Each structure stands twice: as C-alpha cells, then as structure tokens.
Length: 246
Ligand code: NAP
Image (cartoon, rainbow, N blue to C red; front, side):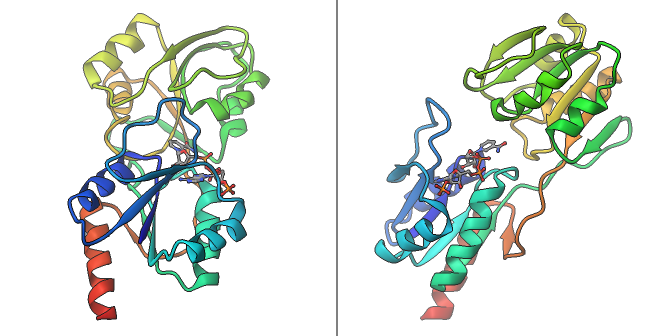
C-alpha cells in the first residue's frame, strides 16, 4: 500500500494517476483543515497521526510500502514527521512538491521568512493590502492594524484585523479577474506565500502588470529526501522502486 500525504493540487493529480492503477493500491491522507475538501479519487483518511511516532505506527500497522509526501510547501511539521517515521520504519519516502515561483523582469518582490516579518515589512503608514497567506497565518497581521486588508481564504478565519474585508474563495484564479479585483479594491501591495504552482500564480502576474509590490513569504527548509515536482515523476519513482525490489 502506498500512502500519499495530501492536501494539494499535486497530491490530487498523483492520486488520479494511481486510481487508474489498481495494481498499486493507495490511500490518501488529509489533515482535515478545510471544511469541504476536494473529492479524492482514492480511499481517504482524515486527521493527524499523532506526530512522527503515530505515523510510524500507522505505516507498520497498515503495511505501507512507500510514502509520497505531497503536502504543501509550507506544511513543515508533517514533512518532518514523515522523514522521521520513514527513517524509523525503513519505508521509502518521496517528496512531491512544486517549485517556488521565480521573480521575472518587472516583479517587485520583497522576500521574508514568515508572517510576522511580512506584517512588519508593510511599514507604519496605512496601506491597502491584498492578503492571501491562509487563515492560520492571519493572527500575525493583528500586530499591524493600521492597514486596510482585503483578505482571501478558503474557510472563514477565526480572527481578522480591524480594517478587513473578507473574500471566501478557492483557486484556481485567472489573471483578468485578479487584475480587476486589485484595481477595484485600489490595492497598493500584495502579501502572499511563495507557494509555487499555477493555481494561485495569477495574482503575481497581475501585480507585475500593474507595477504593484509583492511581499512573499519564503517556504521553510525541508529535510533532504528524494524530491520530484510532477505527479508523473512520482509515478516513475514508484515504478523504479518496484523494479529494484523485483
Ligand atoms: P503542518 O503544520 O505541517 O502539520 C500540522 C499537523 O497536521 C501535523 O503534525 C499532522 O498532525 C497534521 N497533518 C498535516 N498534514 C497532514 C496530512 N496530509 N495527513 C494527516 N495529518 C496531517 O501542516 P499545515 O501547514 O497545517 O497544513 C495542513 C494540511 O493542509 C497539509 O496536508 C497541507 O498539504 C495542506 N495545505 C497547507 C497549506 C499551508 O499553507 N500550510 C496550504 C494549502 C494546503 P499529527 O502530528 O497529529 O500527525
């Protein structure tokens, strides 16, 4: 059995490839953070494992032959747990992760480590900010209440800064609509994560065209394990592993 740690577009794409391969039984695991997760083409389990030790127990109890960690580039804990649990149980591990976006001519980026640094980088003067960092990162912006925020999340956040307008929407997004939104809301600066991938890139392209600055949170460093950036490459890794075993 193959365990996919999911919650991303890449994980769902890989799940679709495996769903067409009944010779490779697989299970997808979701953290359970989104209220209405995207429908998965494979058997699905939801919720944490109980740290690295819990995940190691799960791998052993379910006869997992390989783990594909296809979690989001910013999901740091689960990836660290997967590396530990796979090392402990001798389970092969592959990371399937999209590459971060790279700046292009015309991009005006400030890269920062985390959400508190992003809030600080907005400066003292009140600005009109488009904030798309995920609802769990929003508390950091309570420390910068002078700004007017247009906040977009998938699920409703628990706390919002005082001057905030909320949009609940899930990607993918297109550039024309992002441009219209930025103009209508008179946005002066965008704050987001450098998540990579196509689904949420439109705001970066729109910012470039409108000459707007972007404050980008950098993805955290990850344990060094085998890594690919497409579902097809992950399938090739699995097949290579199988043929080495045979
Ligand atoms: P995280 O901080 O790395 O993980 C926190 C805890 O959530 C983990 O220790 C684990 O609990 C549980 N968990 C995370 N992913 C899981 C999975 N796929 N299956 C089972 N348990 C999981 O993760 P996060 O940043 O909160 O992200 C949670 C999920 O949302 C991830 O699956 C990720 O792919 C997805 N996501 C995250 C972001 C983001 O910006 N962080 C964006 C889009 C999607 P236990 O220790 O109890 O096992």
